[in-house]
Amino acid sequence: MPKYKNYTLRNFKDIPQISKLPEDYIFAIEVVGHVLPFKVNNYVIDELIDWDNYENDAIFTLTFPRKEMLKPHHFEAMADLLRRGASKEEIQKKANEIRFELNPHPAGQFKNIPKFNGKELKGIQHKYKETVLFFPSQGQTCHAYCSFCFRWPQFVGISELKFAMKEVELLIEYLSAHPEVTDVLFTGGDPLIMKTRVLEHYIRPLLEADLPNLQTIRIGTKALGFWPYRFLSDDDSDELLKLFEDIVKSGKHLAFMAHFNHQKELETPAVEKAVERILNTGAVIRTQSPVMKNINDDPQVWSSMWKKQVSMNMIPYYMFIARDTGAQHYFGVPLYKAYEIFKEAYKNVSGIARTVRGPSMSAEPGKIQVSGVTQINGEKVFVLNFLQGRNPNWVMRPFFAKYDESAMWVSDLEPAFDKRFFYEEELEKILAGDL
Image (cartoon, rainbow, N blue to C red; front, top):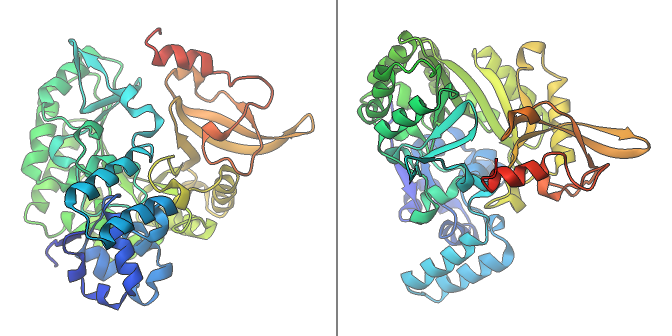
């Protein structure tokens, strides 16, 4: 079993396969990697990427920076600094300028930070009534970074852009004061980058608190896709699985939220064995991914993923729209196309795989699903509805937007039959703290 080794901008030229790439590709990795976070590991390099076809390889694109991931003027500005040997301070200054132009916190994430006893809890987000997101401080990195990741600001060293928190006691107090919360989602980064003893520091006090309202502990992770050896041969793999068993034995539902972006991530012996070991603890694995140009914007990829996931006893859960941040111009799929991809994939799987929901935008007002395209009174429209909303009463209420093939996010849409979408006035009051 391999030992984990990661590569970043500092040492990526030590990757043996990199020497086969053209010089302009290598330079592009350096340029883009100075703006967007870059980290990859030996499992991804050795077992997932087809280096004979790296230009078209989905996993290469998923993990390695490419020139097109920055807009041309941003790329040239950074490239010019590197070519002329600019100082670290100049490079950092320009990188941060570019980053702040890339919508570093989409969907109003800072508006999800709750106040409790007069203090902002910057390691917690509470957007939907039943679910609290918790960002453990030591889990704010990953085994490798996805080049599309909407949480890229967590990894670039700008403290004011980062969500993180160490105080599990504050989390427990907050949950006790909010009996409407049934689910806690550990997220990041990736909570499973932490050693088990560190993760236990957060999980076991939650179990010992025995909060009657807490029913589900979720763990959002890419570890199965990027480092399945976390569950097989890391020096604390068995302890991690024992922790999972203890969560289940405590009476809590353990929802393992696995991120798989392409079917290739499901095909190694290591991931198959890791999935089996996790399921044996009593955890339930649900799968999710955004639909992304240049990686998985193909119905066949999605139907194959869902079928394989079901065959491995995982539950397809969400297809998301790539958020309007970072390299969305490179990865983003127009809403009409995302809907077509979802529809074509959905109709080619059995009912067992149709647990999946989407395509969905995790936007400022909530999770908005593109559930159809139709004609009403001669006008072609998108049919939309909320799968989650800042106001739960918005959920499953259909509404309509003018059909627009260039639209890639809800902010690009116009209401079909009114001046405003039905939720907009109430949303303004919610965000202003008036409701």
